[in-house]
Length: 337
Image 1 (tube, helix red, strand yellow):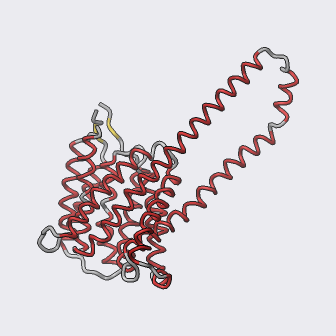
Image 2 (image 1 turned 120 degrees about the vertical axis):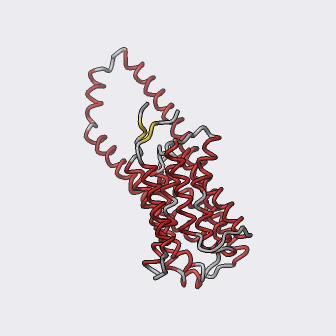
Image 3 (image 1 turned 30 degrees about the vertical axis):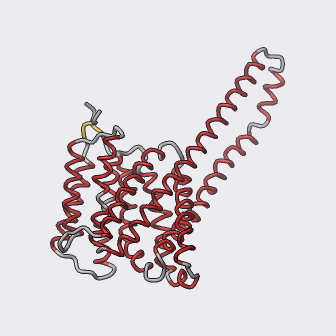
């Protein structure tokens, strides 16, 4: 049996996304002092989309320039062949073949655009619902419990994956169990009880699981940057509607929170979610969810280093166990059929 090697590049991209999201917890907590949850999510999502739009067009001119140069350099070559093979019997067949190829490419491009739009909207809906459930769930529970319950997608993803035919090795399941233990030590400082906020965040964890699986399905089929951009536009519009109807945001409040909103929009949305889409391409979604769950570790470390919050021995042990779980998940494993 062949061993399945986890791509290092993909793992590093997902790790960088987790680091950015971990630090974003600080920005999110500060920004919520000035604006409502729907407003915060709407503005940061739209900023994320705006950041990605230039990147989409920057890459296009490069491709167009290459094609343009080729056309200029090879301009006279077709004329030579036309003069030499004007009466060639294969000429009509070549033209017919060319028309067939053009038609096939057109259909393929239309199908790819359709898949891109459907995928972007699906990702945006999942992201919008998950982030807003989390935003309002945090109001009724502790940040530690919210972080623990949200990261439970590391269990939900492989369970849902079983129904979709995505099997995991014993190493991965062991890593999931270790990560859960580490998360509990890291996030739960007092007793654990289920309240209104916990249920909202649990729904958020399920929605983030769907988000990971939707990305797993669409990312190999379409351009990751375009998919991410459509995702943020969808999330921004859907969050903006209840923001305008329920929260009535004022420009002065948004400007007062410009620093955390800008970080959340540019880094958390524009950069980190795009890294997730690119890094998750052709990767086991369970392994991806394990790496992304490190955002809980990073958030605690960010609170300790940036905000001066205390880090207990129990929390340090939780971080160590989680990192060990991620390393276990990265080891080469026998591929499960």
